[in-house]
Structures are given as structure tokens and as C-alpha cells.
Length: 390
Image 1 (cartoon, rainbow, N blue to C red):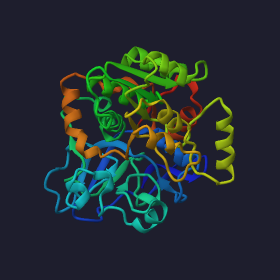
Image 2 (cartoon, rainbow, N blue to C red):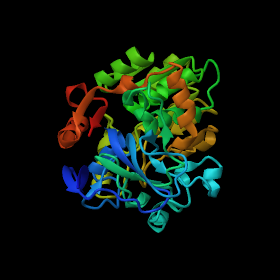
Image 3 (cartoon, helix red, strand yellow):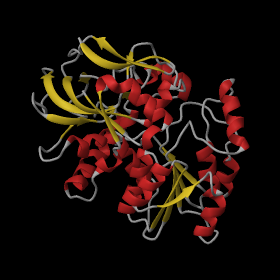
């Protein structure tokens, strides 16, 4: 038996004793987890905004560790290898994988029928992220089973610490993809809604890709301070400043060249529209609060790009599609195709272009996970990112 962080119901996270994972397919490996993290996306699960969660589901999709057992068909990994695991599970050989669209793998979601009813087509399987994405046990545990082990996990050099490479599992590639989808040109101004960990990496990535200015939009002082001091962004506190007016003033009335929504379904706003969205959610007339997405669309310059990496689960209201169509905006979105970015971003870490550990503000043991979730949820003690070490 091992310890694992389990979803036991809405706003109910517990550390439970559960059976150790077993090799179920000859392409599996078993990992002893050395580091795992709580992601903002996990809060959507805990808050009950993602359907198809079941009592006892093991949470966590950002994890790394040491290979302790391999299936008979695994060729690229050996016992003792230290690896980071991407959160989407990909086969590497289907239509989507061959196109580099790994989070859309056609062979790893056994509950594809469920996702098809919700979204029209299914995504890949994903670790620790509801039965819509396969019901796979997550990595906030002492051990984890990793399917298709020759396709997903990447070996990491001994000289790099867990803190430097852990976020290759999700938030660093996700932030980078958010910037990559903006087709950044030299001199561009990029605005990012949300200065949480994904937003921090989106801003840092935009600068690495050649943006002249990056503007971070949030309300939490610790996040805004991190964006200024650790990333080099200009910041807007949306509770103190009208975002649309500020962005127009900063860009000579034109608007940012691209806008990144790194917030997603639980966006906040001091205005009446926030109360409207909360009410609609309460009666299940919409599943998501798209406040940041609406703002990003309205703020983006004519002919610009809106990049959506914040998680959305279902349906939204008052979507300004007239603005999209009439102003020739391009919308790009997606769960991150992590496999595509892991090696290039690992190279950037090794070349000291970035140390992803800058987002870590808190640490804890696995058995402290319920308190850590509470801290992260309520933004106590200037918490931005929590790493747990089993």
C-alpha cells in the first residue's frame, strides 16, 4: 500500500492508503515519485467544475521520479532512470501524435465516448484529471504507473535538480505554447491575463521568443511582484485600473499584438459581469466563467491573436464572437502538446536561459497535501506554487 492524494468529493481532498500501482501493459513503467506539484487546474477539480470525478480518484498531473519497474516491451528506460512525465498520455503513432498534437492522442483515452458527448471529439488520456480524460491515477502519490513509457517521459541530467525540471511536466511547456501560438514578431507587445505559474511562464516565454513588452494582468500583489521582479513584465492590477483603458494607453490606442488567457474557467472580476457568471454557474446555465477570455478578445488589436491556455471545461455565455469575426482575430487554443516542447525547453534550462524554479514559493510533504490545497486555494501566505516531496 502507498499514500496518495485523493479527491473524495467537492472541496474534499485527503491523503489515503491505496494499492500500489502495477504494470498493466508491457509498455508501462512504475515510477517512485520524487517531486509533484499542485496545479491551478487541480483546483478546478476540487471546486467541482470538471465533471466525471469519482470518489477516491488520485490527483496530480505534474510529477517526476525514478523508474523502479519496467514492462517487458519498454526499450528506452531502465530501472534507476530519473524522468519527468508529461501530463498528456500519448501513443506516439496515431494520426494526432504523428502531427505533434499529443494531447489529442486517439489511443489513450478509454472513455472517449464520454468526452465525445461533452466536446464532440475526445482528447488524449491525462494523468489525474477526471474520467473524461481516461480516469488515470495521478502523480500526487508515492508511486505512479506511466503508460507508453517510451513515448512520454524524458530522462533528465543528474546535474539538474528536481526543482529545475519538474515543471517540464506541464506548466512550463503550457506557458511556452501559449506564447508560441502568438506567432511573436520582434517588437510585439503581448498581454497575459493571469500571473499564476502558467502566466509567469507564458510571459517569460514571450520575452524569450522576442516580444518587446509583456504586460501581466492580475489582482494578487505577490503574483504581480513576481511578474515584475522575476520575469521583467509590466503589470496591471485589474482591481485598481481599467484594463482596456490601460492597454490602449500603453499601445497608442491599437491594443496588444496578441493576448494570452492563462486564467480559464474560474476567472474573477470586480464588475457586475462576475456576479452574472457566478449566478449562471450556480444554476448550471453555464459551466465556466470566461471573464478573462472576453477581455482578451476585446483588448486585442485588429488582426491579432488570442491564445487560450487557461482550462475550460464546457460552455460559456456572452462570448463576443462578433468582435472575433469583424476584427479578423485569430483564436488558438489547446491543452499543451507537452511532448513537443520537453526537449527544446530542457535545452533552454541546461543553457541557463531560464530556471523554472523561480515560481516555487512553498514546499511540503505529501501528507500535508490537504493543508497545501487550502493554502493554494485561498492564496494564503503569498502562495504562488507548491511542490510536494513524497
